Amino acid sequence: MNTQKMEKDYLLHKWLNNEATPEELEQLKTDPEYASYIQISNATSAFELPQMDSEPNFKAISNKIKPVHQLHKPNIFSVVWKVAAIFAVLLAGYYYTTTLDTSVKTDIAQTETFSLPDTSEVILNAGSKITYNKKNWAKSRELSLDGEAYFKVTKGNKFSVKTVEGTVSVLGTQFNVFVRDGFFAVACYEGLVSVTYNDTILKVPAGSKIQIENGKLMMNETAEDPSPDWLAAESSFENAPLSIVVKEIERQYPVKVTLENVDFEKRFTGSFTHKKLDLALKAICEPLQLQYKIDKNGAVHIDAKNSK
Amino acid sequence: MKKPQNVCNENTFNRLYEAHSKPVWRFIYFKCGDTAQADDLVQEAFIKLWQNCAKITQEKAKSFLYTVCNNAFLNEVAHHKVVLKHAKRQPEKTNFHSPEFLMEESQFHEKLKTSLENLSEAQRTAFLLNRIEGKKYAEIAEMLNISVKAVEKRMSQALATLRKEIGNI
Image 1 (cartoon, rainbow over the protein chains, first blue to last red):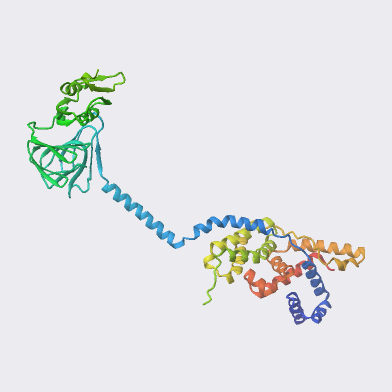
Image 2 (image 1 turned 90 degrees about the vertical axis):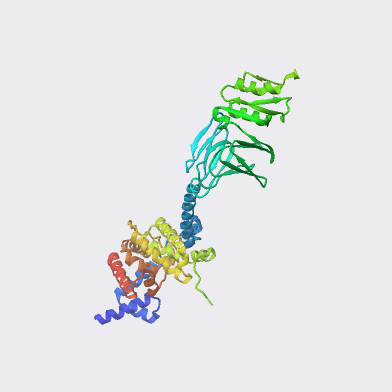
């Protein structure tokens, strides 16, 4: 009985697997139980399924894998690159912050006194800028200057002031450097200063002052003052072109100066105060036979005295 | 010389979709009985296939798809009833029968349909894969990741349950 059922089950599965012969099927059908199994199986095969909508599904898949695809491409290397990039940024940031040059800048009518890392003292005149590197200072005392500054250098190794016009280097001294618009003046008040410009080296001893215009030495003479005039709120010039003088006015006072019918190359020797504009203008105009006018906007006009 | 090709190629992927999306979809449908869910699972399976394309050879793609679907389905909480459409095939034969017979037959189909819907997921999937998809036991075993013996058992159980539900005919 049991073996007979097993036999029939075997045949049933064989038929379901589509491997039975017609005779075997007939043999199965003789048993009513198996006949109904066959009927059920056949009827089930006749059922239909809802159909999948191929297109929209594929579109949905494509939409989702497109961005994934792009992310996928760089695989392992992307990780390496990311790590490398992070390190590079960190390193660059460290390097940048530690080697970043320090800048000191002054605006119009403003002076700034500060100390360098070796306690050398710098007084920066109006409208000037000094840039130096704190980290490298112990190795090389080097700074760049644009404008005018007075230095009291602590004794030590070479101290250099780089300017567009030339380099001033010293060992330990007090000196003033003025570099603006092609006009380069160095005055030494203590010790010895060496000035390099256009492949020329010039020694400036204490109490001397040199002036270089457009790469040409214009003056080399002794200065009597113990320190530059501008430290006492005065600007002094020695045979300087008027344009340089006017620019100094504009630096020390918040005014705009216009020159009319005046030769820019007119030479000025003298000084003007930083405290009173009226006085300063007078000091410049009188000796040069000029007249000045301050209009209601505060602008200064300078013209030749006999032009009107 | 012949290296097993992986699936990371749009043409290959499209071809695999053409070949397998519908069978896979029906496979899932037998399990869950929900067209929307079947859509979702098919999309998920193909997306996974693409994401892992570098690791999968073309030969392995098919079984990968079924395995992913199986697992995804097990993770789904809501199992729906399978709703089958009524048979539209084999109409010629019945035309010759008497109206009473036709009535009986349609009643029989209706009963079978509800009975099928009430089968357990395991029995139904195996039974419908065999009956509707015409899959052999060995293929079903591979798809469901079970033994051929287990398929046999599910088939027998499914038939016995159906017969009992419908009643003697």
